[in-house]
Length: 349
Ligand SMILES: O=c1ccc(O)c[nH]1
Ligand SMILES: [Fe+2]
Image (cartoon, rainbow, N blue to C red; front, side):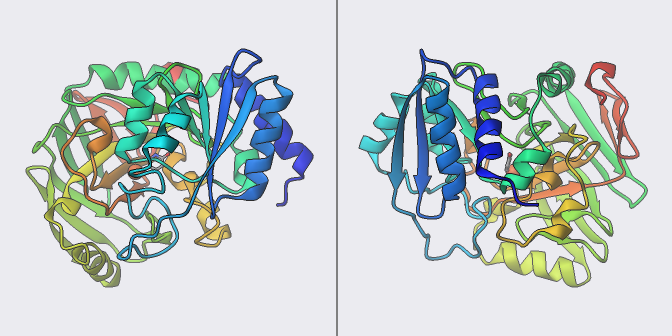
């Protein structure tokens, strides 16, 4: 439902406070032609009310001629910031950037974070921001799960639908998303509440079955008939099923890039305020549907780029695919069983 400007500003004051914004800080609000002006205004007002030095960085939108759709997660890598060194310097000067245009999965984001600047992505509709306000408790739970994932050397995912996937872990870092950017060099996304890593290169193997009700992002569709992905040596080798399988095959083939079939970040959702059902109540262009990525107990896997953790796959095609009802085991020990979080205890809602 609609959120008033006053409430949206107060929400930003709360989340920027959690992100350690105060009168000692400088805050840059990064925007482009397609940013939600209400979010830009609320972020600017809230940062000023917290006493920070506030400035705006506006970049002309960048449309890649082959990108399809409006979802910024669909076509990754090049952004309105790409190649604009002066704007990047202006952003690196900030203690915190509120990103209302999306730098995620771009090399520039990593370069900026390496300077110690924090980045908070905020592009979802105000109603979603309000329903999934981040809390210190979310941080504690996500970090508890991250302590377990950091130690893991293998992951196995199975489901009644027929998934039987495994990979080794350790080559790449664990990434947490709990909704506020409170530590130097941290990127986070409001709203969120999940964690992930990447399979060791070439180690992802087996089958992932997208069952009825699972979600395909950025298509923003619920699967209606099973799609089976066969994975060997880190890459999807076969996609079969009915219409959705054909649609996914054709969509990925469009990029004419073998790297689109690489398995990207894999992890699970820990946000009880995110709902599997929420996507059905929004238009495709309302936002990127973080409910689907963060809902409690999902297995979220993705395809394509791994540049944000130093990988070599800089393909633009990125699919985020959350599955319900999976068992997720780390080193043979369950963290999720039948789509419910079972361990570590400190991560359970
Ligand atoms: O918060 C996000 C959003 C998209 C994505 O691919 C990862 N994390
Ligand atoms: Fe993703």
